[in-house]
Length: 211
Ligand code: CDP
Image 1 (tube, protein in one colour):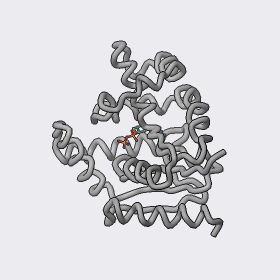
Image 2: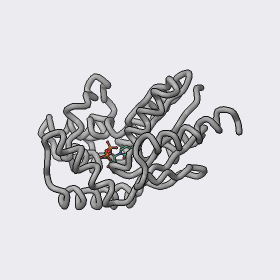
Image 3: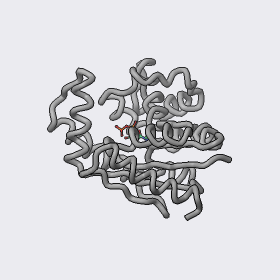
């Protein structure tokens, strides 16, 4: 079992970039678990199935092939919204647990980011981070990110979408978004990525040396 860094937090909090940079810094593997739920939603849409079709979503999750998890088709705003619908189905979440846990076992270590990594998937992770930022700052970041992809839906629409998604992710019965026990909270509202990374590295370094 390698060293595990579990990162959770709401949409556009900066957890994805932080997870990637941390993994690079330590030579760990990185899994953006949101992509798994986005891929499940994508499969339903490609098959013309409604997102409300829980059985089809479960079947898609059970058969999920990593080859399908191709980022460019999954990153848009619509997929984020769709992912937050299928991710609320307990059977979908169950079907993805083993894959995520196996991923986390890699040597020398792994960084997983999502909503329930520290609470459900890797409750024994050596480091747990809860990355957050104000809703307005997150909306600004997501708006910029989408505009760069050529998907400018307007700041207000992004803000509204984030609020709806936060409510759905935090309010669902199965594996809701919440701070794990023992998690370090990292509020990135006023931090750029290098500052957030430096902060997270201090936490990881301390855990690695048993400080
Ligand atoms: O950064 P953003 O939230 O837009 O995207 P994401 O991390 O790819 O997550 C998309 C959706 O997948 C979230 O709104 C959650 O509903 C769901 N998700 C989840 O339930 N559990 C995870 N471990 C990761 C994502």
